[in-house]
Length: 231
Image (cartoon, rainbow, N blue to C red; front, side):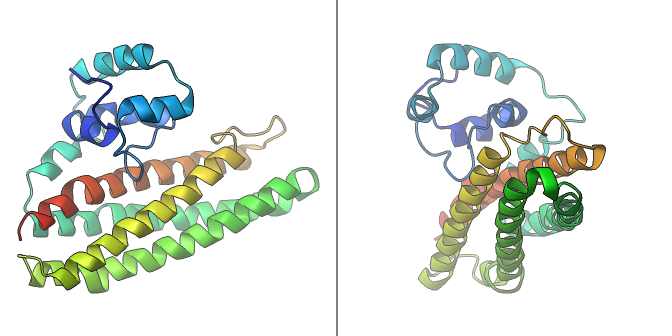
């Protein structure tokens, strides 16, 4: 049974089928998911008992065969090197594709809707451009430096662990920008005069961030701790 003293990261690790529920409430289980549920919900002003009842109900449901988050269960059973291969072959590919698609869409609505939403869209465009650059550099750092070192040193040395900690800090930075974007867009709620492209932009961006959250969770809460334990 899930209690208020558990962390959201622990909940997702044990019950991956709760990810959709947590995403819907915009609760951070990856970058900031290591505080007790009681603390996380107090900061959000949410009813803890009601939340725990709903969360336990969701956790008890059988995972659908086509649940996009069910792969966390199999991910936990991989060796560290296999985890790194899987991250590169799945999330790195998906996130790059969604980042490029979001960038194109955002540029379009920035121009078309500038007369009525120019201030908000300019801020959104600026935040997203910075986030995209950071993530692209982060992925390159993982693929070309840190992950190869982790494969070369299955029993981690201090230098490699320090680089892993740097990745975790970068995850936190990306998470902070995503939260700022969520607040700016009222959790991706399109304005009343939004055209289909505007709505599609928000939906694509939200899909990107959902995948990034799962991506970061797999690294911060599964792959990196498992690697550190190999010392």
